Each structure stands twice: as structure tokens, then as C-alpha cells.
Amino acid sequence: MLPNVSDRFFDFLKEKSLWVRKETLDIHRIAQETRLASSLSCVEILVTLYYGKIINHNPKNTKWEQRDRFIISKGHGSISFYPILADLGYFPKEELGRVCKEGTFLGGIPDCIIPGYETTNGSLGHGLGVACGIALALKRRDRKEKVFVLLGDGELYEGSVWEAVMFAREHMLDNLTAIVDDNKICMLDFCRNILNLEPLEDKFRAFQWDVHTVDGHNVRELHNILLNLRKDERGKPKVLIASTVKGKGVPVLETDPLNHIKNIKPEDIDRVISDLK
Amino acid sequence: MNVEKKTMRDVFIESVYNRMHGDSNIFFLSADFGSPKLDILREKFRERFINVGIAEQNLINVSTGLALEGYTVYAYAIAPFLTMRAFEQIRINIALHAQLMDVNVNIIGVGAGLSYDVSGPTHHCLEDISIMRTLPNISIFSPSDWAMAEKFVDYSIRVKKPKYIRFDGKPLPRIYENIRDVKLENGFHEIREGDEICLISTGYMTHKALCIADSLSRIGLLIGVIDVFLLKPINEEQFFKLLKKYRSVITIEEAFIEKGGLDSLISGILSKRNSSVRLRRKGFGDSYVFEMGSRDHLHKLNGLDDESIIKDIREMLKS
Image 1 (spheres, rainbow over the protein chains, first blue to last red):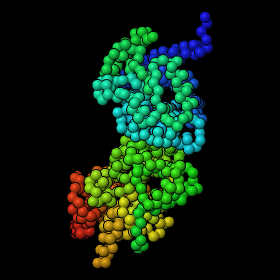
Image 2: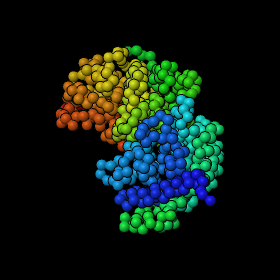
Image 3: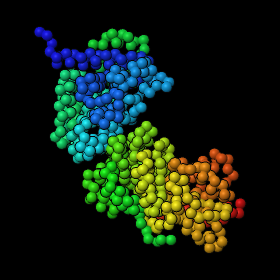
């Protein structure tokens, strides 16, 4: 039997994910300062949002009024967004070969000088509150654009996140979707060994958010649920807790609780890339 | 002098309220902090007044989001909590973004210096000017009376950059009778012209400086008084022209000294130009004030009472 269009579409998203992982490793080869493991756990999320056409955007006009607003609150862990932005035309692909080099705008931690980044989020815990302000502004102007925020699970230790969680529900920001890249590891250990974040769903439910969960590496599931969440306007802010693996695709990272600060040596990158599935 | 006392915040908020009628682009956010005039504003503009709760960090973050979408935003709270609890939010979301895009957030802190005298050291605000001066891209406005505060409303809407506005908590009399003639952009104003010595102050302490200058003028001593209301950006060249008329200047402030506040601003202006103008700094040393008492009492404990300042003036005149 021939694969249907839908299968082809998800195969395309899978291929893109593989390509993004490869490109991210290539960046890490020349810029060892980049946080690799954290950037690998959110690859399918970013790919689904952008290649899956969940997010409305315009690479030719980053201030396009009808764009959806995407805030990457876990800024450090989004090096994998660089190849996506370059591929979509936000900046020339050659720039990917200059990450962290003198004179470039692509740093070890992304800033809003990079075309395609709405805000600067090198410091954790800021993105959701700023996104609340944006979502509120869009609502007051009766605009239909949506706001998406990517948070890390470790970031949820920041108290300011929960100030924003309370705010979003009170103001019924149903144009806001938070995606938690739940990769279960902080800088020094598994979150469960630091301060257990579980039961995470219950925490958001207690704040009366609309809570969903997903396998954060399954593009088919991600696509279905994000498409629904984008349309959903029932008065509640929405959170999608995406269960992911920190360092996904690189076995030596996947099993290591210290993988946040673990580098893959430049000479090992080719082998790691050839082992990618 | 017009002796009718008003709080800067009430006059400022009333003026913002009046602007909100014709300007649908203004939001007013508070971290559960009020004022009589704010009660009227929040009743009338329910869609554009938001109480974020006792959550200064989120106050700044939500304000940033609104400003990034083009709104003029006022973020209102108690000064020490706003500037120090939410300092990193101000740094990352406001100062940093403002370098690349319009972020018109007007951060209003009430309770400058010792406004909350008997509330103790948690509520004393002796660090705000120092720490806010370290941030690029943010203006610092510290008026000494309600007329100046009112004048700033137009600037706060027109200039689409972040500003830190610090208000005294207490009702105070008007200083500026001819406020139209004062140039905001200069950042300072010589209220009294003196012979040899000049007092330099901001906010509440300008009232104190005027009292001292007036009492000394009765015995024939002409002491200058310069009120600094816009600490950043300030017209340094103009300011230096004024300072070098004097042999000595004394900064008096309800703030820690030698830590980047008003005294450091003046010291910087003088030293950059190898000036021979002598500078004496009066304010708080390197410790907090736990003892209770009125503002006058706390001044006395820290050498900021009239008597101590006059003693300094006399010493400097002799030397």
C-alpha cells in the first residue's frame, strides 16, 4: 500500500528533526559553549511548530502583525532553533558556521538580535510573564494571533513562573499555550532528586489551566495536539507537558544526569552524527 | 511658597487618568499598591488597569509584554520592592530589550529614601538610585515636588523608552512655581543661587536644602541649591558649567553614599573634568537604620539634620 499524504507529512517532520539534530551537532562542533543536551530534547517540538505549520510567521518580516508570538523561555536550550530559522529564510545558512565567533549575532545563548527570536531569554523564568503581557495586549485589541511559550521543566523552580501561571488564568488568556520541554534533568541532577516537580500536571490543574500531555518526540502526536490547542479558546490558558529525553539522539548524553554541561568533543561529532536515527 | 501639600503620586496618577480618556494606548498596572487617585482610575478603566497581586516580578514581565505590543505602560509599586525584588526582570526584560526596540514601561516606585520612616529598614529605600543607574537604557526621574511630577506625565508618554520614576511617599509642598520654565531635558535646576557653596539634592532632600538656604540667607549667607530631578540622562556639560561657579558643593541625600548614587554622579562630573570644585557627600554610611523614629530623628542620627549640614557649610567656608 502507498503511504497516504498524512504519512508523508509526518515522515517529512521526522526527516527535518533528524536534519536539525545533525545541524545542531555541527554547531556544537564549532561552538562547544552551546548547551547541547537541552537543545536536543526540544527538536521535535520546534520542528512541529514551524515545519508543521502550527505557528504563523513571516521570515521576510519579523514584525509582521499577523505573526504568532513564540517566546523561547528556555533560551539556552534552543540552539536547535538556529538551523530551523536559517532554513526558513530568517538569515543566511552560512551564519550557522559562525556561531559564537567574533562579530556574529548567533551566540551560545540566543538573544533577540537574532531574526526570529521575539525576546531575549538567557535568564530563566521570564518568558511566561512576558508572554502573558503579549497575550493580554492581543486580547484587548481583539487580535487573533496566538502566543506560544517554550519552558524547560527545570525552569519551573523559578517562582516568577508561578506568578505568571496565576495571572494567565485570572485573565483567561486562552490565546496562550505553554509547552514544557519536560526533559527531567537540571544542571546537576534529575529534577526528582533535587525538588520533585511531580505531579506536574496536578500543579497546573490546581491553577485551573487546561492541561495536556504528549510524547515530546512523537511528531504525529505533537502535531495533532498543538493544532487543537491553537484553535481552543475556552477561557483557559493551556499547557502541554511534553515528555522528552534530554540529549535525545546521542546515547552517551541520554543516560547522564550531568548531560546539561557535557560536551561532545569536535573529533567525536562525525561518529555521533552517523549514529543518529 | 504655595504651602498646599500633595503627594506626587496622586497628582501624577490624576494626570495619567486624564490622558487615558483620550489615549486608549495606556495601561496602568499595580502590584497591589494604591492611592486615592488610583481608586478613581481603576474604577473607570477596568480593562486597562490591572492589579497583578503582590508580585513585582510579574508586574515587570507583564508590563514588558504589553509594551512590546506597543502600549504605554505604568508599573506601580513600593519603590524598594519594585527595584530590588524585580531588578533582574527590569534588567533583562526592560533595559536589555530597550536597546533594540521600543519598550515604554514607566516603572513607578513610591517611597523613595526614608518616606516610610517608621516602617524600618525593609521599607527604607536607600539603594534604588545607585542600582538603577547601573542599567543602560533606563532614565531615572526623581522629582522634588508634585508640579515636577505632573510635568513629567507628558514626557513619560512621548518618550518611548523605559523610565524609573521615584516618588516620595509623603505629601509635600510645591517648590516650582514656574514649572513651565524648567527644562526637563537638562535634568537639574538651580533653585537658589549662592556665593561659594551649593547644596545638591534630589527628591525630598531638596525641601531640606531650601530650608537651610533660606535660614542662612537671613544671616547674610547665600547658599546655592541645585535640585537634580532627572539623574539619567543628564546634561553633564550644562551641569558642570553651573557647578564650577562654586568653590564647594555638598550633596545631601537619603541614600547610601559612595555607592553610585547622586554623590557619585556629581563626583563623576567633576573628576572627569579635573575640576577643583570641592565635594562633600552627606548621606548614609555602610549600615542599615534599625532605630525607629521620624524622618527628622533618622536624619539626626545620620548627620543629615539642619544643624549638622550647617556645621559642614561653615567648616567648608572656613577652609
